[in-house]
Image 1 (cartoon, rainbow, N blue to C red):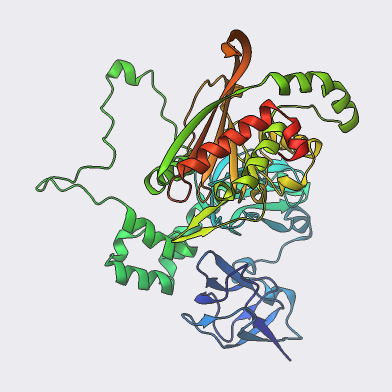
Image 2: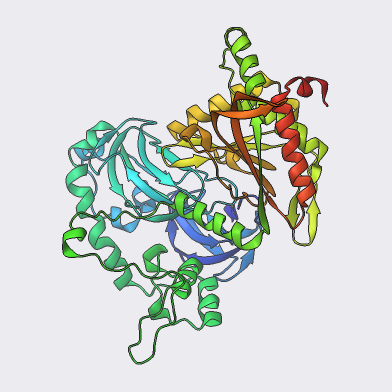
Length: 511
């Protein structure tokens, strides 16, 4: 009886894959869950394990074949009389373990990169909380990954001993890649620290030297198209195999300087060298992926959008009086403090309903009008400001908005905001006033077309009915994309926000 080996699920929006490497050939014996081949998609590399123990009878899809999900890859013939020793990999069948050794050598469990979220294909290993040889409990945090958008904690899938770290700090890993190996059971604690660090070191060179490594088909094609030499590319795949991403990195890497010809001027002027005295007092730290992504997106927004900023001031007297009168009753009834951000979210939704183009976005030559109001609210985190999204803010009460903002702020400090909570949004509110900012020109968050900047509230002298009075005033700044938002809509929408805050009854009466 033969068992079919089929293409597993490849993920959302992935409709095909390329068979990159077969690790077995027809006639080879295979064990359950032993890796048989590797598939390569546009986003990730997928390893295909054997569903049963037996013998690889036939390979239906050879290397280089493009296959769809659930397509037949190979057939595995059952071997009823095959003993357990025959099913093990050759490296493990040399000696038969003794009874005492069986208890010490626990089952190995892989620590994998968790789901990173939509459109996120890789992460950087930021911190390992454990080292090789440490005992770990199930669900205990092992390491922290950093993506372009959020930080992801990786818990231990089993209790045991951390036997091997495959991705050290600073390594870039793809979705579903192996991070480490855990030996289940506390009995392996004594032997794991001594054996684990030494074993992996010679393994990789031996494997590379023992066989001719076949690069990924897509990588070969990419090298041919880019005119990149194989020697110029460092492979990060299994046994040093070159992947498509390796070719892209090699193609984008700066060429070695040539003394005979002047080098082109860099995009950013190099930093002048520090004196010996100053260098001893400096500390060089690699920029985080999150900060680099924020910088890149903001620069892209500046280069793409026709960005302008309009300013206004708002008298906070009435909304502050309203808050002072009802904050205790509000907290008692709803279990959350009454802040000012909830009023501004309501005021923004009110303005966006009157001027829908401010809530729209640009898609090529099209303007996309959104029939919903997903408002991003900037909150502080240890790694800087993040912008979680309040979905369908127009359908939420003031208490529900305040409750979401409080929850976002708490989880931002803990680094537990999910990718889905940071994705999307039609408009953003940034509150630099919490840090003391008096005025700023915020940069829009593409594909959004506008952003509101709130600032600190200060008492100022203003003229009312010919009299100079002191009022708590806040400056507002709204940056917008002039490609689709005219100055008229930008100014009037900001005025609508100002009027709603100065007279909160407008929000109740929808005026």
